[in-house]
Image (tube, rainbow, N blue to C red):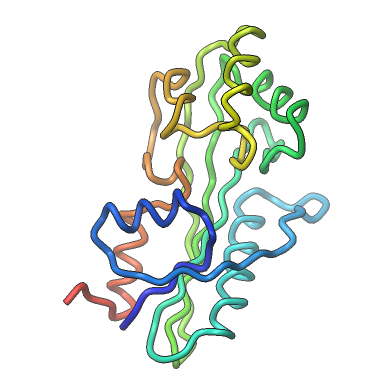
Length: 191
């Protein structure tokens, strides 16, 4: 049974490749705007399911579609991907010196029988204080622009994170251990 990653994310693809999984990749762009008052867990689960459905409709043959959506949340405020450099700066100013949660929703669809599984993983991330000049240096790298919360733990922003509580891969965008358990529950095996 083949795996299909419903994402154009190079970070998610790298997680699967580094874990030794064979897969194909199909993009799954959906409107990621939160509904008014939508809870973070509900948002990522809804978006992951929508992405999985889009790709499942195009998939051929026995397979499992894997889709995910990741956000950052702090005190009930949802941080998605920044819309501009100023937006990224504002996010980093708010996150600096505080602990926030990275929340990822994952949706799986087994084909051809359309059996579905979803789950949400949350990881606490502790950030050091970020002086304005450090934020400016980080933004100049370009790393912040396509990542929820305007940072990537696997890149230069890792220097601002003294510790996390939970799954590292969840912060990158795909909670690997939980994903593998769910794939096994759906009948997938590596051999």
